[in-house]
Image (cartoon, rainbow, N blue to C red; front, side, top):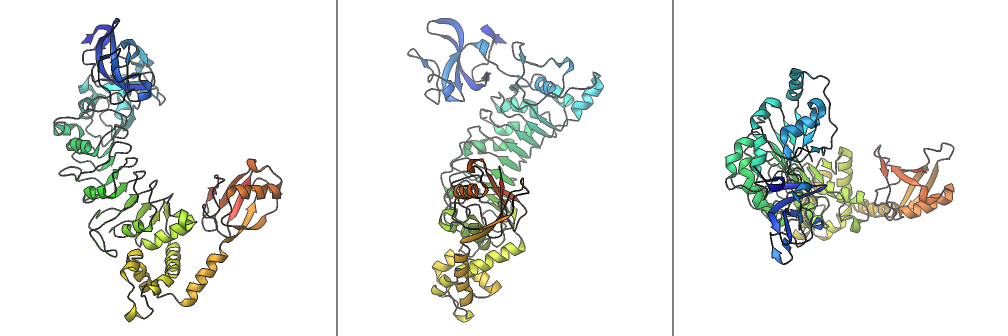
Amino acid sequence: MMQSDSVPSDAVGRRIACRDEYGTVRFVGKVTSAPEIWLGVEWDNPERGKHNGTHEGVHYFQCSHPTGGSFIRPQKTNFGVDFLLALKDRYGQEENQGIQDCRGNPLRRCQKPIEYLGSRDAEVKQRWFDALLVVSVRECHVSHAIEEDQISNVCPNIVELDLSKNLFASWEKVAQITRHLRNLEHLDLSQNKLLLLSNPVSLSDAFANLKALAIQYNGLTWAQVLECAPMWPVLERAHLASNAISVLERPVGVLQNLTLLDLSSNLLAGADQLVHIAYLPRLEQLILSNTGLTSLYFEDIQPDGKTAMFPKLAFLAIDKNRISEFSTVNELNKLQNLEQLKFSDYAMVECEKNAKTVRQLIIAKLGGLKVLNRTEISTDERKGAELDYRKKFGKDWLKAGGSRDPAKNTPDKEFCAEHPRYQVLIEMYGAPEEAEMELQKLFALKDQLLVLSIKCPDNPDQKLLEKKLPESMTIQKVRWLLHRLLRVPGAELKLTYISSKMDMEIDMDNDLKSLSYYSVESGDCILVRW
């Protein structure tokens, strides 16, 4: 049933699109000094609006942002299309009629190219749709399913479905589609504003086999996630990035099958919130990138013990945060099964002056770590890092009460708290000798001057150069030096280097950073192109 000017009878609360903007209808009716029907819309992007729902002194609807609302004519809006129409348009529709909006107007918002069928035969076409396992109708203005019972006939074998950035207004509308896809395991509902249900478990049949769910950029709190969770009885992977999750609560009777939880780009209230998800029994991967964390701690155990929290956790991402103390790394060693860590752009580089040094310290502190920042830790790298760590803090160990005599080796609590693995390294490699510790200092001074080769791969006539450069030298100064040596404008130079230890070419594209920032070492080769 439609209202006047082709407005659906259930328009209030519906999601709409107008050009490239998305919003929610909050009002339908006449406004002051205008006899026509208008839609009062709260826009997802408040910069698109003009007011908070009040016009010429009359309050018509409520907005969460003071400039998030405006009035538009119904003819300019799109209330969405049927799922099967969008599917057939994207993956092959007879006569290529395309999607039509609620007024019958052609609509072509799908971003992927249409895959045209080679045959008009209905049986061949049906076999084509039967074969669809991975389907995306992202940004196709899908809002509902008209012929629900036809979904299982047309595309019964879909395993992975992308419904992101469409016009769904409620979980019921999504369930109209998913309950007919019995093989569905992966679902992306990101960038949809979905109303919560009073009885979520009533829709659990629509998501009975769902193992992976992405609901990102949806404005959800953790409490709302837990409220919806009864709908997903077997969910294993939850991608909840860029929502409004700040305060966590312990999941009770829900989300117990999770193996992966992505909370990245949610500003958490603090590290103390993590205790609420620390006892998910199957959680193996936790992504906390860009969550505002400044530290992590597990207070249920002593520095050299193993925490009962996160018992299965093998992968942890804490990059793009404000963690600057190695005490957090010490805490990570308490995790029972941590093997992979993503912790690049660490703030500790500022005090250590060298990203490679920080990497070595992290490896030495985390005995079970196998992969750091997506790079596998070799046996030789681990041994070198642990031996260097043992030498680097040998003097501190002796001052704290450590001794080469096992009977007298009793370093104080402060040292053990700061270096919880040091005693383990002593047992593995023996106590450092005085000569080793002095040699460590000598190498540290010597290593400040890097012996580098300079090569121009695109100019074979240019001779290979060798230079000794300070590790603190900025890329800008390296450019100036090469400008003088090669007589090429410095601004035109593209600099990369190849490590003597890894066959990998690494860009050096930030003029303000030093050679040490890029972990350049003696023996490396700088490649110059222009």
